[in-house]
Image 1 (cartoon, one colour):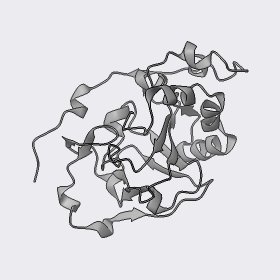
Image 2 (cartoon, helix red, strand yellow):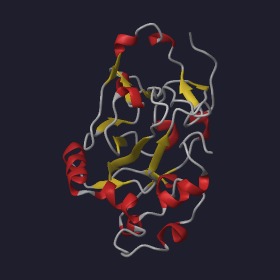
Image 3 (tube, rainbow, N blue to C red):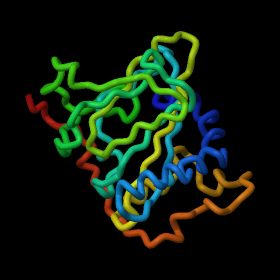
Length: 227
């Protein structure tokens, strides 16, 4: 079992091959939201993450982190997180650190859970009131910029799985890191597309006037504790 996604690699690959999984992030209402936010045409990152998280002891809640070191490209990339079903706090919804999007890049430390990194939270460890959380219903969307510190709550249901989606959006005119255009799995796009009924969204980014940024591995290196 892959502990960052909650199921086996084979099961996850089956989900990643679903045409509906890759069509949903292109829903007109989501595109309209980000077009308004960016005042620009929108690039939907092709790499989508589906999490099927259970309370299994081997599955650790996602630790507090920023998405930017994991995505890179433009700092104006936004994450769109939404559950695929009702998701009360007790099922493991997300919580965000108030005002953290203004702090810029924060040093990292190794951690268990998705991404295997966490920010050094020492300035806020004793201030839980700074964290914002809530219950989510089907159709709710949580969106935030790439420097926002966020984490998952632990699941308290022994027999339920939290299904959720991570999608990233950015202005089309700003640079993207090429890994954001690869599948989030060990598959090739040819394998993902093999049973699709339409080619409309296949390799859609190749038809766009993109610019690319390099990958900076130093952003994922743990640093000496700063406090």
